Amino acid sequence: MSSKKTGGLAGVVAGESAICTVGQGNGLNYRGYSIEDLAKYATFEEVAFLLQFGELPNKIELQEYKEKLTKARSLPEKLKNILENIPKNAHPMDVMRTGCSALGAIEPEFNFQSEQDRVIIRLLGIFPSILLYWHHFHKDGTKLDTNSDEDTIAGYFLEKLHGKSPSQDVRRCMHVSLILYAEHEFNASTFAARICASTLSDTYSAITTGISVLRGPLHGGANEAAMKLIDSFDGIDEAVKGVYKILEDKKLLMGFGHRVYGEDGDPRSPIIKSWSKKLGGDTDTFKISEAIEKVMKKEKPQLPTNADFFSASAYRFLDIPTDYFTPIFIMSRTTGWAAHIKEQRANNKLIRPSSQYIGVENRNYIKLGDR
Ligand code: COA
Image (cartoon, protein in one colour):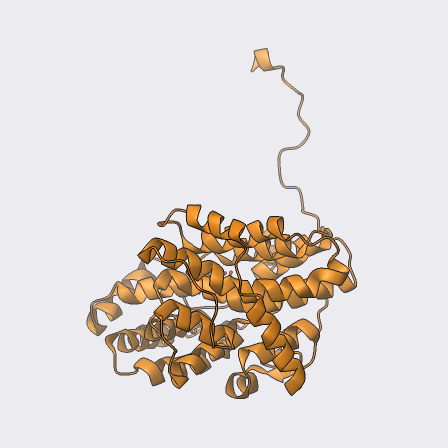
């Protein structure tokens, strides 16, 4: 196989999974349910349960699951100390990665067969607390109180970020965004998490791996990068000129293109775009976003918007700081990572591919003094 053909393992089927379809003529489905239906009817907790346990919960199961998630919000003192000592100008992705890893040391998982579901729920519950404890400690010197009447991750995160209960639309948009980001088959972070799990490592390590890989702007970091791009333009005319310049310079426009969907487009994009429009359709941010999209549709129809592009403006309209966009992705994608970690463990085989050697052939060793 030529290196061009296998570049980035594009098109390579790297394993079997019963969790999600991405494209493949079948749209995006989590365990057989379409993303359109889930985004319209479900709460994020129902989707999290579906991914973690394989089926949608009934009312009692959902109630119990939500109670466990709510209990899992509390922060151990040792973790609070660590969060207080992370610099206030650190990137929030560093906070999340460190928080996840530190919790693994404070509350270790000794036996993943019996403990993995507890650890997954603990991480899902605690991630908003990790981010917002660090946020408030450094922003206003207060220590986050993790008690709340909000019984969902979306509501809890928004309430603790803004100090007040979110409106119905704002809360629902957050649910939809978490649902859209929850799972996406063998994307880079999920595959990396599976590789980690395949070595029989623990859940915290596999999720920390996922966070590390998600961070880059070619993956989860694209929502933050897309917002920075949109913010860099003062108005529609400047945005149009700016996009042409970026294309001329052969640079990347963040939030466009997708390895698997290609020109068919990312089915998550119209859903989050409709929410962005609903919450901020008459703002400059939305109009600039649409102007950028229009130029790209004309000049690069093979590179449509992906989920990240309109997630950026949607989060802006939820009044979320730009560098918290990718940490929110973690709060969601942990469900997908968890499903894959469990699936990998249930039928494990170490993931260890081979490479084709293209380096220098056999050479005679030259002693240090002779070089
Ligand atoms: N803006 C401008 N040009 C882009 C582009 C973008 N967002 N995405 C791809 N291209 C160009 C590439 O430069 C390349 O051009 P070339 O053939 O002249 O070299 C061509 O389109 C093919 O792209 P390639 O990088 O081979 O595709 P890929 O499958 O490896 O990359 C992404 C997929 C997602 C990494 C890529 O589209 C990208 O970098 N997008 C921006 C980051 C982003 O939004 N990531 C989130 C993904 S959900």
